[in-house]
Image 1 (cartoon, rainbow, N blue to C red):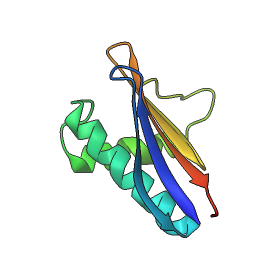
Image 2 (image 1 turned 180 degrees about the vertical axis):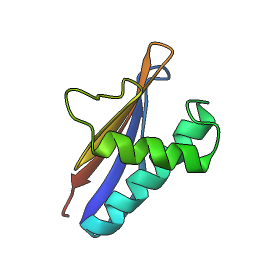
Image 3 (image 1 turned 90 degrees about the vertical axis):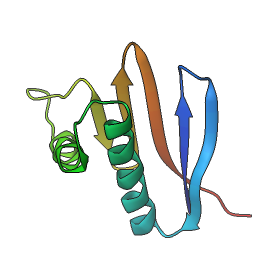
Image 4 (image 1 turned 30 degrees about the horizontal axis):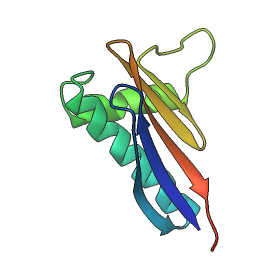
Length: 94
């Protein structure tokens, strides 16, 4: 089963965002959490803009990298004010 973890360099905190769930649900929940954080951190003005930024970061290449947001198949990283907020999908079986 998959879990989504979040850790933040500014607050030195780590938490389990959600889980257990299947891989597709974990990817969707990671996206939802990142979109919400982009708005909270005032990187995006609203959810629609945050979703557009997320989509652009998912499809980014070397030529059009987005500094504030990096998205990979199993994680995402938000850069803001010299800090980093990370999300990671991890596998955990008991």
